Length: 245
Image (cartoon, rainbow, N blue to C red; front, top):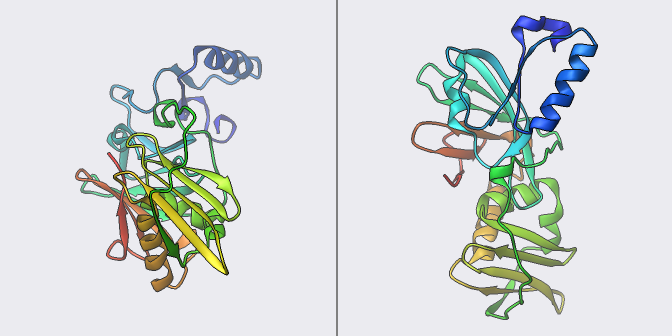
């Protein structure tokens, strides 16, 4: 970016001091001197700074509001919206005159490591409980597709996805809720345990997706306002999911 734009138009922020120092040495050895900052890129706000573009090379569960506060109207934010479902979506947002930001996901299968504060909490070994068992018409293998994991992440934002193939395990470490699937005759059964019916929420998400015509991720969008952050299908008035604060 410095090669294309010049030193004075590029600012980079890195939270790790060692990584930041190595980047500085490397760039300086090449004759490049953009503004380099060691700090928390999720929260830190540069005094008097106003940018045309923010590009994040980490994933976030929700878009940090300080990013919106540092972008000029019409400026853009490009980031990966990730989570604990091994799912992510690259989204390109444009800041509106009212201070909100909106845009669509690109559909590219792009992912970055989650930012430190957005990573899942530590999890000890767990025991699968039978809980309430019922048949399910949702083929568990659908959750392993790119869009499937993304839908599951929207439906159960605080759950982790474990297992493989027909064995899907959803585990919510905050509440201890879990759901897991197994083959049952010619179909599948799901076991749910705990206060959050995780599989019910995932089934509803897939039903809404089916009714919308099974759109690809590039037909999803994100709106970030002062009230909340929502992922939607088709347009902001379509089916939507509220992201956790």
